[in-house]
Structure formats: C-alpha cells, structure tokens
Image (cartoon, rainbow, N blue to C red; front, side):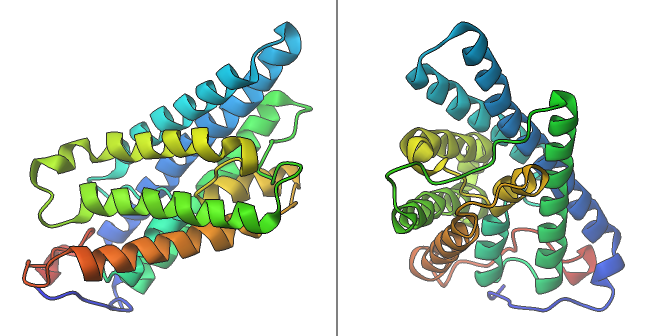
Length: 256
C-alpha cells in the first residue's frame, strides 16, 4: 500500500476508532506527566527535608520518566499507536502515517492530559506549583533549542524504528521499552541543561498550571523540529520504497 497523506474523511471525527484512540492518548499522557512531574516534586521535598546528592536525583528523575513512558506507551500502543507526545504525532503526520484530523485529535488529547495531570499534582501538593521546564543559568536559549531538537530526533527515530517500520518484525514487542529508555537516557544527558522535555505536552501542562513561561517556546519549537526531521528522514531514507506501507494507526477499519 503506498504512503498516504490525507486530511481525513468526513466521518472520521466521530468514528469510534478515533474516539478510542483519542481517549487512549489522553489517559497515557496523563499517566506520563503525572508520574514525571510528580517525581520532580517528590524528590524536591525529599532533598529539602534530608539533603541529597544532585547526581542521584537526576538518575531518579530519568528513571521515573523512563518507567512512566514505558507504561504509558504500552497502555496505548495497540489503540492509538502510543504517541504520548505532540512531536511524535507531528513526525508521523509528516510521514503520512496518520491523517490531519487524527493528529489534531491527538494533540488536543495530549495537551488536556498534561493539564489535568499538572492540576492534580498541584492540588495534591497544595502550595507547591508544578516545576515545569526552563533553561539552566549559564545555558543559552539557542543551546537549549539545539538540545531539544537533537534529543527529540533520537526519540522519534527510535519510535519509527521499533514501532512503525514495516520491517521491524519481533522488534516491535520491545518498542515501549526502547522508547522509555531513550527518554531516560536523554534526561541524563539534557536534564541539567534544559530539563530535557522532548515533548511539548509534557512542558505545557506544568507551565500553564504553575504559570512558568520562561524559555517555553524552546519546548515547542525544538521537539517539533526534531520530530519532523526524524519522521521525514526515516520515511524517505530508511524505509525501502518497495516495502508495503501499513499505517501506524488506521483511519478506520473499513479503509482496509
């Protein structure tokens, strides 16, 4: 089946598959942001009360994000493709794997999931606002932008290689684990510099609830550029053109 770019059929907006996939993206993004942002708040409290080592704190945060994303992708990959990230959705949209309508639904669900997660964390903490993301002192905005582009490129490239490539074979069974691990590794690399978001939804919910907008544009522009580059490069330079194309998430069963 050839690569296909489509806006989406008229009935796709109300099709049960679209609703189920959108709900899956909302819940999975909620799971990921709740655990990820919660790990920052929890570790902050632990180290204020007992003191601690910043290196071990970074490892704990990276592990929390890796495990949370592993669970979130696993929970939704069979329903929505397990994007849990507007940058992943953007990369698959440019690669012709989903329609524009489906992408818009996913983006709305991902942002809402992040907002609800941040709201619940803030309410649970009572007086502590969500931490959010920002560029560390001494690190320029452009350096943060480049970091986000490179890290998100690695993330979306891994998504393509393990979850989307038609020739992935049995490798697809470890896709959620591989995706979680690359995010955890990138947190270790970029966390001290810009927080290592790689995900506009992950950055947006805490920023909105905590009203922390410093350097926020980086966490949209960087991941979207990185995701777009990974999607286009993998689609057109890595996947052989003669391999039959199977969409990452079908528009609706009657299409096939």
